Length: 307
Image (cartoon, rainbow, N blue to C red):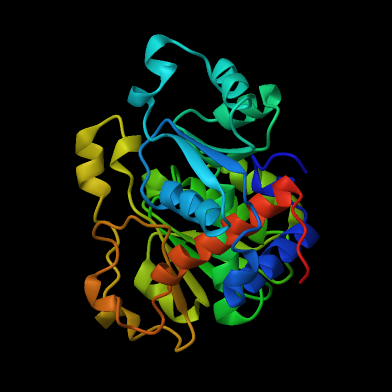
């Protein structure tokens, strides 16, 4: 494997191996402290990001490597009209591996076509976010002890939520998964995701607008933000942005071993009174994101260390 553009670029066996490596990094961080000495990571973020960019940078720094890059299109040669293809050709002369976020779907895949170094899709528009998916899978596996035979509730903006799309495609390959898709009618999962990932494989799913009625049967609740930046109409965003607000009071109806995940940032969709509940796992996700990105960088660079 040279690039990671889509979560399906990884087989289930490769995902399991990646998560096992991430677990070992979490347990023995010093063993990996110099694994990337002399290596450079380029972070090409054409769209603002806090968690993902800093997580990639922390992952490389934790392994003795260095980082370079830009954090918005306005601080890159994109303002001069340079294409993604030319930018990655140039960056290939400077760095050993690249993480790219771009507001246009498909931009990282185009970059990979012209790149001489591994390209990691760090989120492309409303399309995919494979490293967030690895983070989510590591968190679910660590909390529930498995990735199969789970009822997964996905709630919020399921139309533009690239983390949701990637997670559905990945979890659909595990046995006994059921999805409960909770959203306003206007923000349902795109039909192509259902037709490609669920319908052909006979994966059961339900589409509903009611969070509270479905909460008691969920093993995992994945909350998402209604993304203002994806709307063309301000009035539609204002009307939909607070469709779902998870509170400590509502959480009383959930299973004692439910876990609440969120890719962050949150706005109003999870009340702060949920943060102290032991079932709140969204800040654990942030820490796990560093470990899985370390594991991914090591894998793409072909770095081998004794386990």
